[in-house]
Length: 278
Image (cartoon, rainbow, N blue to C red; front, side, top):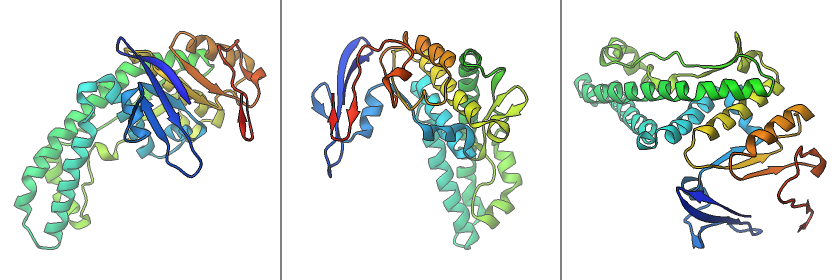
């Protein structure tokens, strides 16, 4: 698969080669990359696949991971904040287990508690800013697709040094930190309904698609949109809304079981059958 696009003001050409029994080979402007995954970091790409419904219907970890990726796109200079927090958290948890095993005393925990509190507070504030930035476009795109009053919520408690110290005995007993943004969740709702618990699969699908479209609007450079089986559960009206929306967002690749499912005339159609593509 080969695509052309732009990174900043410079045109780029990216390709991924698949060979039976071999690893994927990714190239950017003709130069081979260390891995196919590294292409994601070099080329602004947004992907919809059916398993992305986990962002709405899955557990809190799936939502944290998704919105932390959005955080990195909205605030590129702070994209490392989630990883920095998790690294400090891992060190504090290791220190907790040493105290639990009586290999260390609780005083050794103080520097890590301070660092977890500082980095955790930064991460919570960045997540709040990310959601505030994303929410208006998410609500607008969801409304266009027939999901009314869509909203995002993030009710997080700041992990202060004092709050960590207040539960220190519990954390030592369990050997893990029981407070902080690593345990937070993000609400994806329609009106008063939490779509994880009270949304149909169709509504969850619309919510994920609306998030992707909203994210695309926030990017400075037009992204490459890869939409796999996005049309199968959309009626004609929603397909047309989607097509009109993505037509102004840069390049988009859409897979469908039949070309007739596409609501607008595509620039190029590739028909895939067992062993052939034309």
